[in-house]
Image (cartoon, rainbow, N blue to C red; front, top):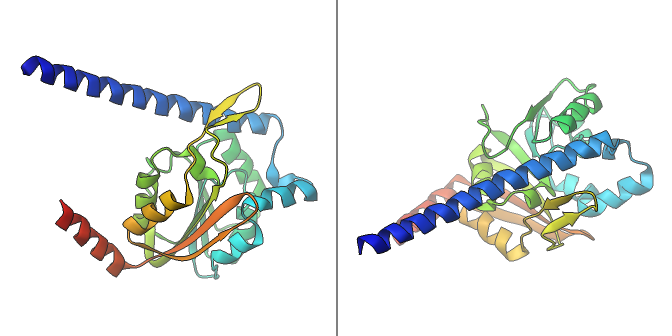
Length: 239
C-alpha cells in the first residue's frame, strides 16, 4: 500500500513538473514571438488602413463601444501589445494601464502612447503581477489565447474590478493549438464560447452582451458584489 501511494505521488509530481516546464517553455516562445515581431517592424499601430481593417475583425468599433468608456473611468488592458486598441481608449478615460509580457512590445507601446499623460505600462505576467488598485473597465483582445489557466485569469479580473466594473473579452473563433509561422511556432490555448460563459458566470460576473465579429467572440460582463457573494455561497455549500 505504501509503495502504491509512493508511485501515485511520484506520478503526480512528474505530471505537475512536466506541466510547469511546458508552461514556462510556452511562455518563453510567446515572448520571443512578439519580440521578433518588433524586430521585423511589425507594429499594428502603424499598419496601413487595409491591415487595420483586418485586425478589427477580432474587435473593432463594436468592441470599443462595449467598454462603455467615460472620462472618469480607470482602465486596464491585458495584452496591450504596441497600443493598437489603447490608442482608441487612452483619450477617453481617466487612467489607462496596459500590461504585456514582451519587453520590446512594451517599449514600442511607450513610444506610440507617449502623447498621453494618463498611461502606465507594465512589462510583466498578468497572473503574477500585483496591481496596486482596482479598475472600472478591464479588457483584452486575443491575449487569452496565450493563457492556459483561463479560470485563474478570469478570477483575477473579477478581483481587480470595482463594483459594477466591466470586463470585455475577445477570443478567437479558431481552435488551432499552434500558430505556425514557418520559422517559429507559438503554442495556443483556444477556448469555446461555452467554456468562457461558464468561467465568467462561476466567478460571479453577469454577462450583459455576447456577440460575434468575423473572427472572434466578444463577451461583455459586469461585476456585481451580490452575485459574487451568491456564487461563493453556492461553492461553499457544494464542498
